[in-house]
Image 1 (cartoon, rainbow over the protein chains, first blue to last red):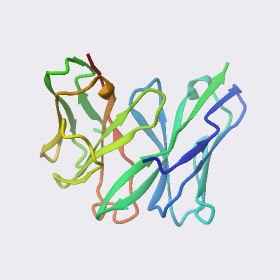
Image 2 (cartoon, chains in turn blue, green):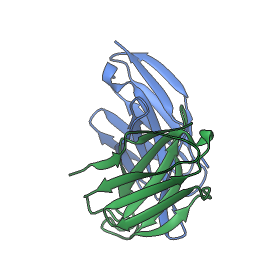
Image 3 (cartoon, chains in turn purple, yellow):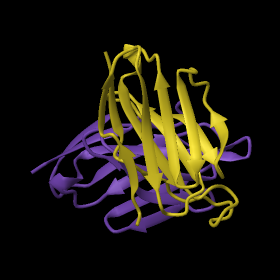
Image 4 (tube, rainbow over the protein chains, first blue to last red):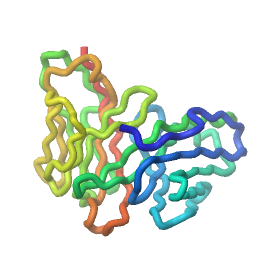
Length: 113
Length: 119
C-alpha cells in the first residue's frame, strides 16, 4: 500500500529553472527519503531527512519536512537536462520490529534543454 | 563497493517454468528487500529479510518464494507465474533497525532490477 502521495504527477520545465516536488504521508515515520529513477531501472538514493529535522541540503537539492502536516518537499535548483527522471519519496516505517520503505506515486520530471 | 548486483537483467518465462532471481551485495548490510514495480507505478514492497530471517511478507502469493542463504545473497524463486506478474523486480539492501545506524535509519541501495516477462 502506498503511504506517500506526490504532486505534481508530472512536471516539465526548462533547463536552469527550479523544480519543486511535494510529498504527503499518513503515519508516523522514522525518516523520509527521496529517490530518483531513470528509465525504469534501479533507484538511486538522493537524500534522507530524519523525523526530527526540518530542512536538509545536498548540492542542488533541498528537502524540507513538516511532521505536523505530514509533508515533505524536494527542490532541485538550476535544473539540467540530466535531471530528467522520476522522483519518489519514501517513508521509512517500522513494522513488527523491522523497517520498510514505502514509496509514493512519484513525480516524472522532464527538463527541456 | 556500494553495488547491489541483480541477475539476470532480463527474463522471459512461461507460466509452467521455474526460475530464480538473484541479488548480491557486499556492503555488510543485514537487511535485504524485494520490490515489484509495474510500468509507471512506484515500487511495491514484497519481502524484507533482517539478519537472514524473513521479517516482512506483504501478503505475496506463494508462487513467489524468497530465500536468503547468507548475509550477502537474496534469491526470489518463481513458479507458476501469471502474465500479470510481468514487472521489474528490484532488490535493495540497507543497515537494519538497531544495527550500525541505530534507530534513525539509513538509505537503501538498489540493484538495477530484473525485467521479468511471463508469457
